Amino acid sequence: MEHAETAGNKIIFSVWFGLLGLTVLELILAYQELPLETMLTVLMVLSVVKAALIIAYFMHLRYELPSLFVTLIPALVFVLIMMTAIFADSSRLAHMRSLLE
Amino acid sequence: MWLFIVSDAITFSAVIFAYGYLRLASAAWPRPFETPSIANATVMTFVLLSSSVAMVLAVRASSLGKVSGAVGWLVATALGGVVFDVLHIREWLGLIAEGVRPFHNPWGTPMFGAAFFTMTGLHMLHVTIGVIYLLIIAVGFQRRKFSAVDVEVSGLYWHFVDLVWMFIFPLVYLLSAKTA
Image 1 (cartoon, rainbow over the protein chains, first blue to last red):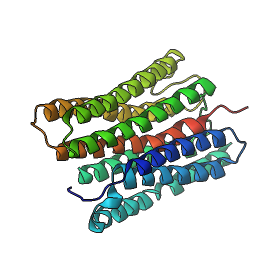
Image 2 (cartoon, helix red, strand yellow; image 1 turned 30 degrees about the horizontal axis):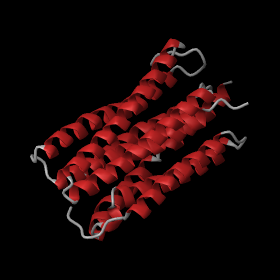
Image 3 (tube, chains in turn blue, yellow; image 1 turned 90 degrees about the vertical axis):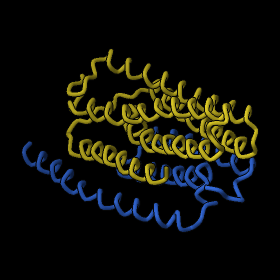
Image 4 (cartoon, rainbow over the protein chains, first blue to last red; image 1 turned 90 degrees about the horizontal axis):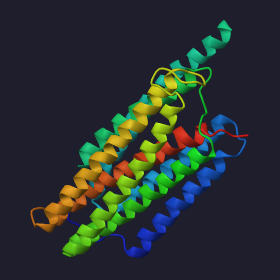
């Protein structure tokens, strides 16, 4: 866990304002009349950006050895992608319900 | 701690994916969150993000050997967690008063309550445990029982709890905002 270099005040406060700003942007988007799929995609992209900022600067993964990143993040992303497999079944249920009605 | 965080991330992902599954497969998913709820959740988000900054300052103070500074920022971080919990519980009580139960609610798909309470409840539990954890670290660091590394590790946990909320907030609140 020891490391020589960490983010300075300027970076930390910029990240903080960035995160608050992205939250406000999400809030404004929530009140736009967008299709649900577009809204979901845009909000999730913004959330991933926020998560990445928190991991990189607050959790200072950016300043750790690259091997820590390589050990943790690709495996997590892979598991998350595998988990999206359930949504095919979920939309099948929605489709079947529309056939029944 | 990093390994715990990755496994906990997968636990939260499973709950969030289950929520997505239910919502996509349900005909009438309720969108009960009116502007005051959204405002409340936005304030909660700001409080959590700001407490993360306090945590960063606590980690820095501890690594520079500034004991009172580190303890002060740790307590400030925990206080942010308490404010978050209070606002969240107030909202839960409001929903319960409106008749939301795990398998029943006045608006639509009965599973809404189960999905909502499981997801936000798991997160609230993490925040509550985090507050206790941070206070233990603060007391231990003051008494020289814990090192700066222990403070740093508790910080990783706290930022992770913050990070999870960055997904729950848009998925639960913003996508269920009662528009028009």
